[in-house]
Amino acid sequence: MFVVSKLFWMIFQPLAFAFLTTLAALACLAFSWSAAAAVFAALAAITLGIACFTTTGAMLMAGLENRFPRPELETPPALAIVLGGGISTGISARRGTYVFSSAADRYIEALRLARIYPAMKILVTGGDNSLSGNIHGEAAPAARFFADHGIAAERLIYEPSARNTAENASLTVALLENQGLKHASCIVITSAYHMPRSMELFGRQRMTVTPWPADYRTDGDARFAISFDKPMINAMMLSTALREWAGLLLLRRSARKES
Image (cartoon, rainbow, N blue to C red; front, top):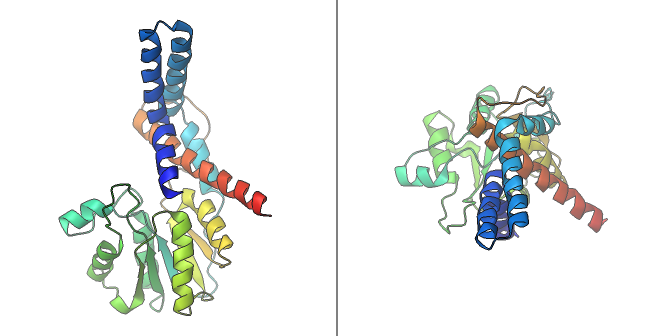
């Protein structure tokens, strides 16, 4: 399922889809199928127009980010579960350091909370989610990051194998069960747009966690507009939002089938 989902998204993310439909239009022209070529060309143009020159992605992203606001913590959490994705694993492994991705705020927030709550442990879950077969998880660079910022090694727990959010949840719960921590007071730190799917998956593992969103990408009040000044950011925002919404809808569909 992991490989299928990766291949599916490689084809249907907006820019890849626009590229493939453009190729299809050119192929149709080569065979003088003008009507089909026009359809594929129109699909490519519409996809590029929406992805690059509108705020559709920001609107969809804001809908995800607003689902789980940060709560007031009545008691200090015993454990912070940091979902992988904040570190560029391949570059970090080759450079022998920690190189952050655009989701670095997951780690920054974990470090901030670790200093506020000195008894809180941190669990980092995340392996290499690429299709290359190179296994470079986040455990080693995360260990270097926290050590460099004064967090004692005995406060850190690593789950190095998860390749996606479903495995983040299932492997983390299994690890916590082995350590007798499944029923501890836990918060989940991940990107705000990623929180709805994460909470759904931890709920499926029958584990109660408190959402602690980080890495906000919008101000929460995005509205539809034409936007010509940042086409690549718009396209990236739409791609990320569509992936999350698709994953969330598939989860709910599978839940209905199981019930």
